[in-house]
Image (tube, rainbow, N blue to C red; front, side):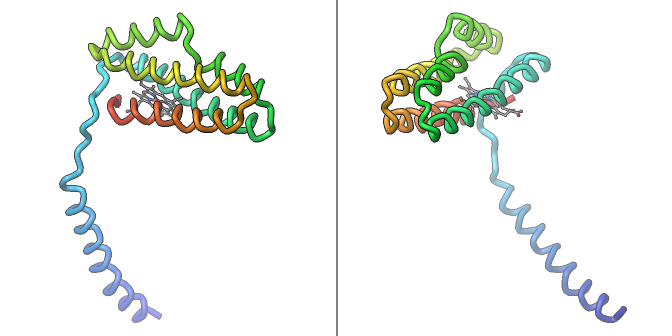
Length: 149
Ligand code: HEC
């Protein structure tokens, strides 16, 4: 039994060391090129909390569309993600504070896509709603590609 363990160790240790070396090699060229948002820590905590709510909203939208409740999906989208003066002000303040005008641009693109989704949903157009949903998710992705904390 002990001998088996010894043999196993002798085989495993170099294999693991090799894998680690390879990972190290692979990660050598990995660079995070996103721009860092220069805002206070508490602001970041608040922003991330809001982001997790966005994620929950997307889940609710998908559920409502699947249940055929397009009208509700439209109202929820408009209320939670659509353009409203408060959100625009918040995005604008964030962009100014961080000195990153593009933050507002990406934020507005997302809110406007949500407005579009809401309109399709309100009219009962399921396929157009889903198409807008994919584009909405990509508008989230676009900002995540550009900025980080
Ligand atoms: C204008 C920019 C912007 C838009 C638009 C945006 N996000 Fe984010 N999001 C961020 C930033 C910045 C972070 C922080 C990334 C980090 O931690 O480095 C973030 C983080 C997150 C996180 C991680 C939260 C955590 O607890 O770590 C989730 C989830 C998320 N976003 C979801 C979404 C969803 C869903 C949408 C679209 C409906 C969206 N975001 C749109 C900028 C944006």
